[in-house]
Image (cartoon, rainbow, N blue to C red; front, top):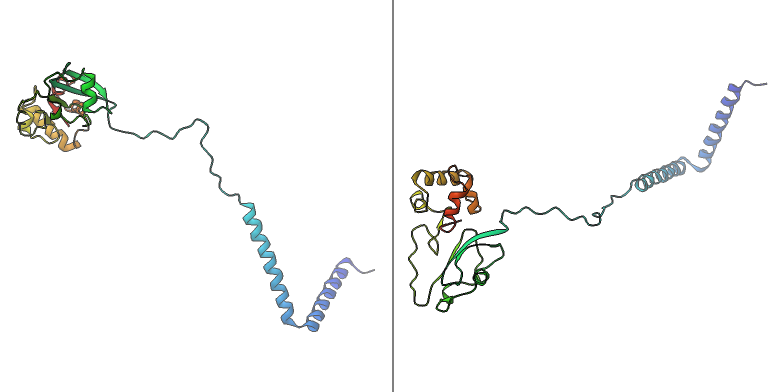
Length: 214
């Protein structure tokens, strides 16, 4: 009886001899081509398995009722505006940011009989701190002061320190503080932002609303 190791050695030698005989019969080149083809098939199968084994990314929809995050805005939702002149109920009004001059006049009861409605732009959008003045027929509009807008309002973002002192309650030192603050932080987005200037509180700001704008 042969030892197991001897039998295995004999088997491998037989396989090698058969392979060598096959190569001699068909030639070395066809054998090499066959091996390359087998290798290519094995590689293709492996790559296909890798591709099929990797799941494609899935875009999950938003949950029901979930809305995208809101976009931040610096525009105020309510405006403080001053309506004066030939209207039935002049005064200080708090209105929605979507209001126009015509909406404000309607909220004030409309124009009086001798009002010059053509002297104001009814389609103009309102701004926080704005003053709207409606003249009577034949009234000459007052000449605006330097640094002021129509209606005599002073723009706190463009007025000089000297022009700012024309505002009620604003002296030279507070005017200089306003100029220094806007130079460092940029223009005021709303009239309420004036409260960030040291020395200006809610009481003083209420005095400025009908005289200043941004």
